[in-house]
Length: 149
Image 1: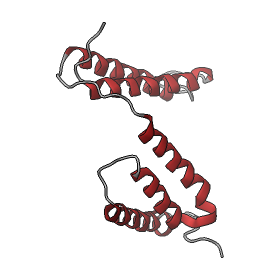
Image 2 (image 1 turned 120 degrees about the horizontal axis):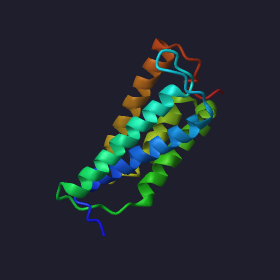
Image 3 (image 1 turned 60 degrees about the horizontal axis):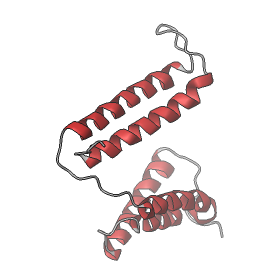
Image 4 (image 1 turned 90 degrees about the vertical axis):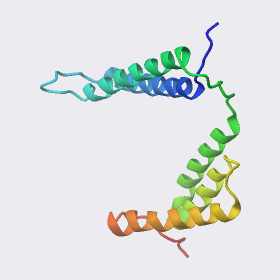
């Protein structure tokens, strides 16, 4: 059995391989074209190959070098991050950008154990203010800022 010596490199490599597989799968029906006249499948295929090679390189490095143990995968943080993203998508229209971002950051913060309530509140407000500045004022996207009353 293979002994993985660098857990972060190993899981990063697996992640890159998964991204590569998804990209190559999606681009399978597109025409490639040539380097001079690229088709719609050229960039996704090249990117998939590069990501796959990088993933294999990281996995090989994790097997051959390092002394960090592989951490066990926990589902709770991943699930909470997915729930946060889904909550943002579902609440952006009825609650507006500010409240949906605060809710999303609060849900995502539950995935970690390092932040306290004050830090989460400050981060939520700062990200909401930054997002309003970027998306509403700078980019002029037609996003609701507050709930429609």
